[in-house]
Length: 362
Ligand SMILES: [Zn+2]
Image (cartoon, rainbow, N blue to C red):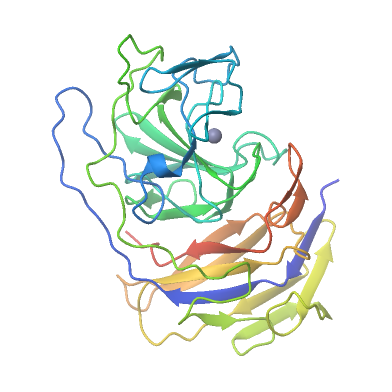
């Protein structure tokens, strides 16, 4: 039943990225834990500006009891998944925030250790959070990131605040590309609202809700928009398409031409089981050391792999002469037109951002 096909119409783009780290000074907070969370995306839009679905303080474990309670104490009954206020959904039992991120870099909310990175259910990619990651930040707090299209971290990896951990998408139980962003207490994974509780009556959530965001949680930097649906490439980027200098392949590739390909021709191979029969390598020549964004273009009409692993080799900035190897997993079956858990979805062709410059040996 498992069908695996590998199609090499992926195009790599390297664009120089200036990285700004923001290490915030610690703030004392006598009423709760020290706020430690940053926004899980680039730019300066607030989480409220990005929110499409609130956290339900009434049974935030997906119990559909007809009662939805927002963090300010406002209550809606039988609001369902439909819009309850200002175009934002009150999804009964929702245990996190849904943020409007359309195939965008997803950042860790704080430093910590990656404790989940993979499919929520390896046997069914249409359910729950799909491709997801979770980070343990210590002091009992975990943040989780669901419905991703690409993962750039692995379990056990140490990460800093606002390091990229993947790209948003629409895997799992999802109606369209967005980020499901949830905060939990260990060891029982009880959902908590990182915006706290400001209602004038006791918080219905069974665990405490504290405001957890640092005073300036944004980033001053935005990820380059590599393409407008595959038609243009970010200025200054280097594109290495199949057949172009820097591209090489092994194994048996089938070639074809397609008007949807950016340059060159299509290279594709299929397997129904077993290991891949063909591989390809893209090598970029960069003028200097630095941090680079790698964009993978996924064609909407031809790419049908369920899962494409990319191994990225980069120089270690801290140890000259050492090569860092990093495996990035991209889900291709949820990009383009596909049957989602609720309906057919069409995301169009997409750039999946795999930022490897942030992978540093410690
Ligand atoms: Zn959600």
